[in-house]
Image 1: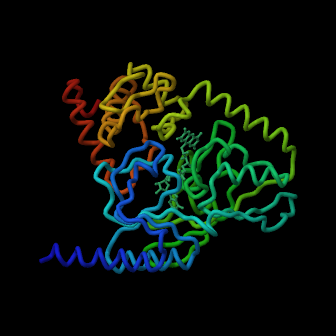
Image 2: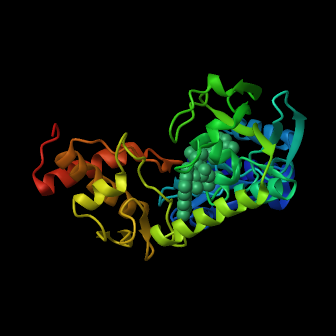
Image 3: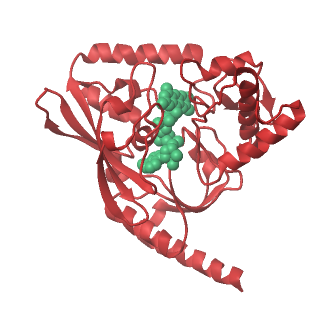
Length: 338
Ligand SMILES: Cc1cc2nc3c(=O)[nH]c(=O)nc-3n(C[C@H](O)[C@H](O)[C@H](O)COP(=O)(O)OP(=O)(O)OC[C@H]3O[C@@H](n4cnc5c(N)ncnc54)[C@H](O)[C@@H]3O)c2cc1C
């Protein structure tokens, strides 16, 4: 009886969401298609709101049917669960995929408002076309601007936090709009401390008129470096782990002998040991097993805890990782407090 009630409610939610968004609400959308890693079962509802009103109405609808809401950009730093997500997965499009120059600042810089759905490479190309430099380090970072804000995305040269001003968010629990300054967000290496339930809608960055050719050269150099040193075009999330202070996760993983290590369809890249590749229909479990193996061995040999940079969306990846780490320790007879 309970099952029938929930089926009826899910059907109602589907038709109301379709009423709101039409074709921009997809049912049972395979998340593997929405992740650069090509891993993930179906999302019950995949939605692409184009306006703030659509977004707020969709979030309210999900809350009315007691369904969780998850945000993604291009899924280039996300691991989705094999069993999929029983919830509403939101990808911002339409007005969220645009940017505009707001004002000139007294120091000669320009304040630009960027929608969270803007693809990084499109944003940088557009800025350069209009003569603005300062954001070109984002060119080769796959993803949308919202994901870049959340991750404080960056390269060895620069990171988003350095040019970020304000972030405008929707509190998905209250549907209130919040606007916070960078200093209130505890922005750190590959980390931004967003309030719980916050969905980034847009943010302001500072850029300036400058030498566009030099900026293009910097982006081209970054491309060449990546093609030489990273399996950039293969299915991955880029760096699986954040670099520990003063060291490189890739160096540590290589040093414990895991370069090229395989679990099911997932492999530690032969080119860069911090890139884990989906080489042959890998599952989330294959990927997590490799992560667990790397964390256990690096902790054992170097007493360093590798922090996942990849984000677990729609499941408790940390618990799964802890379970798989216990299995790894058992098979290599390592005690937990090593
Ligand atoms: C080949 C490759 C190279 C890479 N190189 C780099 C690099 O040099 N530097 C670097 O920093 N990263 C790198 N990455 C990782 C990735 O590109 C960045 O983390 C990027 O910023 C993720 O953006 P996204 O839109 O794909 O985010 P997603 O993977 O879709 O989401 C990432 C996280 O942010 C959340 N999120 C996304 N959008 C929003 C929003 N609007 N509001 C609230 N939460 C949101 C998601 O729920 C998830 O937790 C690389 C990835 C790949 C595949």
